[in-house]
Length: 89
Image (cartoon, one colour):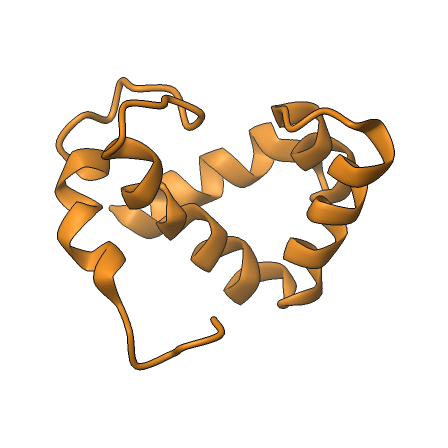
């Protein structure tokens, strides 16, 4: 977002899309960069403030886990993941 012309996450998208069974929060030094596509989806779907709100929730709770997403995303993360899957299709 800060450097819109730099899209190096493109080279990691296959690590996300080629392994659809991996949880969103998988950490293996590849998947998490490809999973940034989910943040792009959230920003397009709910507006860029949703990302800031998630970071603020993480700051309040002191824990970077999926519950921060669930509390901020309208309808919860489960609903967003279903729609994200359709968008990807």
